[in-house]
Amino acid sequence: MQTIDLSHSNYETGLPSPPLTLGKLERIYHLYNRRELISPDPLEFVYRFDVSREREIAGFIASSLAFGNVPQINKTLAALFERIGKSPYSLVCSASRRELTSLFHGIKHRFISGEEIGLLLFGIGRVVKEHGSLGNCFLKYYSNDDGNVLPALMGFVAEMKKLTNRDLGFLVPDPKGGSACKRLNLFLRWMVRNDNVDVGCWSGIPPSALIVPLDVHMHRIGIEFSLTKRKDCSMKTAIEITEGFRKFSPDPVKYDFCLTKLSMLKKKSSQFS
Image (cartoon, rainbow, N blue to C red; front, side):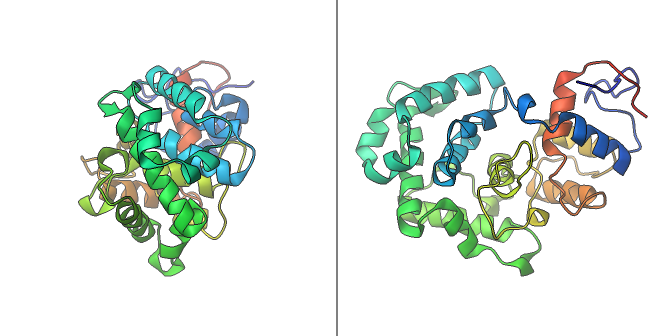
């Protein structure tokens, strides 16, 4: 596979030096936005399943636990999905809260216990049984007039809290608090966009409404390429960086995976101009 010469790149990000241009972004996208490059991204666990109703649940689980170092994330997810079995949909729709919290007893991901993971799946199940799917629930709160998915995200999280009858805390952060909600926005990217990487399980929500999944790495990219001057990893910063990418594409989250992948690879090959 042809790669990009990083010999004159920013050391921290592994990306070509500024200025950022549409030509540079498109070349990175076509080189690195490939299905075979997904691993070790948690998204690979979604591809274990073939139908949308399974994939959206697998995606919500995988994205919710996508924090910490990558090997540990994948180790936790491998253990979880081994216990979940062939159908996440059947499990969350049939198991009780007690059964789910018991099923994951002994599993721990950093400071998150197996019981908390079981409660997350219980909440997913309540939403699915109430609305038919996670996507239907999200669409209930989405309006094209809103400009982006933030109001729908607030409604979706509030609905899950209501149906679960408790706050799911760190696993499902509340956007009302100003959090960038990186993992929720990552989940939405997987569900809404449809290309060689993102699975595109949902319809009715345009990619143009998505918000960049903002972490420390993407924040550094945003500052490096003058997409933001904000110093915090907040929702306001995520939206500002999203608007910066919108100047290059009406699908502002299009470049999220490939920019991250390029930074991870940091390989040197043909000249990137």
